[in-house]
Image (cartoon, rainbow, N blue to C red; front, side, top):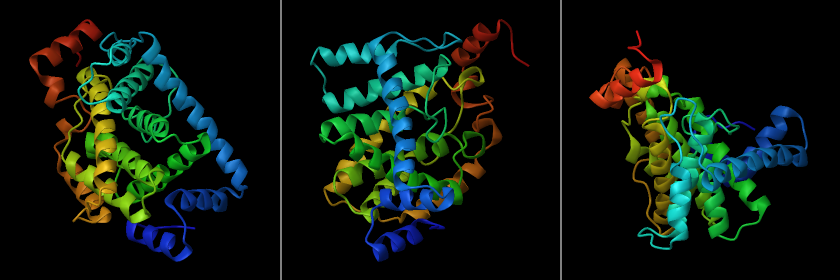
Amino acid sequence: MFAKNGEDLLYICSSKGIKLSEFAILSEMEQKGCSKDEVFETMRKTFYVMKEEVKEGSEKEVFSVSGLIGGDGYKVNNYLKKGKSLTGDVMVKAMGRALSCSEVNASMGRIVACPTAGSCGILPAVITTAGEALDKTEDEIIEGLFAAAAVGIIIAQNATLAGAEGGCQAECGSAAAMSAAAVVEMMGGTPRMSLDAGAIVLQNILGLVCDPVAGLVEIPCAKRNFAGAVSALTTADLVMAGVESKIPFDDAVEAMYRVGRNLPSALRETAMGGIATTKTGLELRKKVFGKDKE
């Protein structure tokens, strides 16, 4: 089972009466020649890693090898316990978990690159937090991961997931689009509603550059992860309220790819522009490497 783009994906889901998650499962079964149970159990193992990474940096201070970031996931979790949040428990929990994953990644811990290491906090934070808020079973949450995978596959086939090629919009943007689509399905939305959510997220993050300080996916990457998680969750609510994307998903993906290719190389993960070359960004680079990096 193969879908070349979003419209093709919607046609297949409609004609067969299946959800995005079911499409992803059937595709994997066909490609790998394995059973549904085998496919599901493989994703379950992935989910367990996600559960650990959102938990680790929330329950204790985790610092990156470089020392540039660390402890923020723990701070946010402690703030959550005080019950003084302006945006609500769901949002604060998702933000803290996204930061936790980024910190675990930067500390050389075990993470799921979904779709990349630099954007690793978005989907785990969103899927675990939404699953708890919606009172979903473990299997239902895992189905959400398959829905995210279906969207990620389409983006990868028609654009890029790499910051070096398309800027951070390709990494955090894709991760947030995948997450929003997953949550919409978990909330009972249709495949088209899921793709609407993905399209809206991509439009809202269009043009986001990739400018890691010292060339490390820590600053500003970690905080872009929590922003991506928030975008995914708010967009899911927007779509479930009945708001549609006027720009189709495929158009949004194509625009994201085109914008990314038009970004100067200095803004595509080279650390030669943006935040990376601010006064403070350069000072931090010198602090990490001990001297000016050539």
